[in-house]
Image (cartoon, rainbow, N blue to C red; front, side):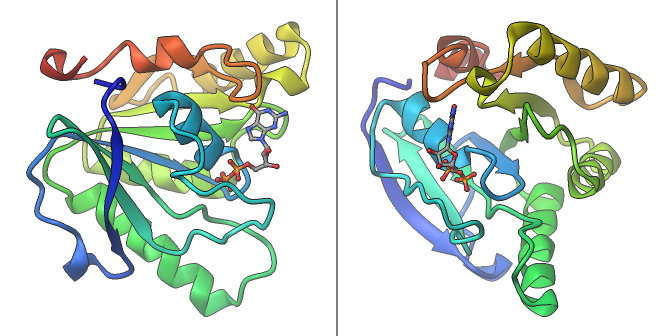
Length: 197
Ligand code: GDP
């Protein structure tokens, strides 16, 4: 399915403008600057469609992309960047929460975690929410090229341990580098829906 052309088709700043859920969806969440846009570009091999930036928090809306009429990839706004105004921060977080807790057709959330920095309180908040709503999610460690392989493994084990009582998490932790391409193929492979692999 990732060989299909990626097409941007909707952006939503409020839940009432989410497009109708006609396709299975995989969403990507994480703190800003975690490497989400780079990963979406690497995953779909379509550079530049998903905007990457060094400016944390630039993606303010939930962006919906489709791969032919098979799968919808959803770019959730990065949360937790330091310099936004409190009320702005909260409204984005609310939007993400609303999406993951109510969206029909949401097959999985890939929660991206910076390998060097580990999981943040806002990540755990999202995890709790997904657990409450039984939303399947997958932890994906990003930018693995920045640390030694042993530290990537350590980080994965630490996260796995902290989530071991959780029911909706899909194990094990996946590891990727958009820079070197490591792990990208693996991430494409395990689709929760065999129809769309
Ligand atoms: P987003 O805010 O989560 O969408 O993050 P971006 O994809 O815009 O990436 C943030 C910064 O991290 C950019 O400077 C990227 O070049 C860099 N980056 C993203 N992925 C990787 C990676 O796999 N390895 C390294 N070393 N840098 C990365």
